[in-house]
Length: 251
Image (tube, helix red, strand yellow):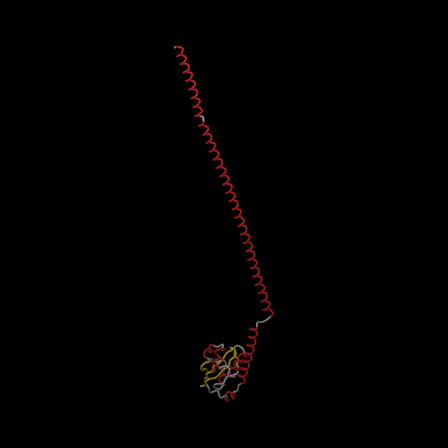
């Protein structure tokens, strides 16, 4: 009986030892996977970090490339603008030079023309002054040679004042043509005075009112006093120009 109990206890001890060994082994096998999971997680996180870093590098590179392209485009635009501005400056300078040369050429040509030719107005003025000078000399000689008998025989010497109208023009040719039109009835004396007279009295049909011999130049006064009432004179030259005189009244 004792031997049986001893055998039973030994078997139980052996059984308990083997079970404890098996339990320890299972425990080890159950706890072992935890560090592997942590390691895998760390590896995945490192991979993600590496990929994120790669993406950020790519993004930075692409941004740098885009910035460089924009900078190049800006440089090209600035260069093109500078070229255009230079061209515009050249064109404007050429135009200014052309205008200056044209002005210089015109001034030179004008100077040559002035040196070689006289203006028509100067020729007409010299001709007019000669004609007026001739008339003045003529009336001056008449005044010197006028005798007392001629003054006595003049029927207009007893007239103190006359009223007359006149048309004043610049040259004798115009005066002759205007008088011809008046005498042919194409235009009235008063209307011709309004249209052609250079005297302010032309606004009133050429009327000068009453005047004596002293108020007018000798050529004008002598003609106005010698005319009959309503008679129109031939062109009379004075220092003011050429006159067509019409005597309207005497007293």
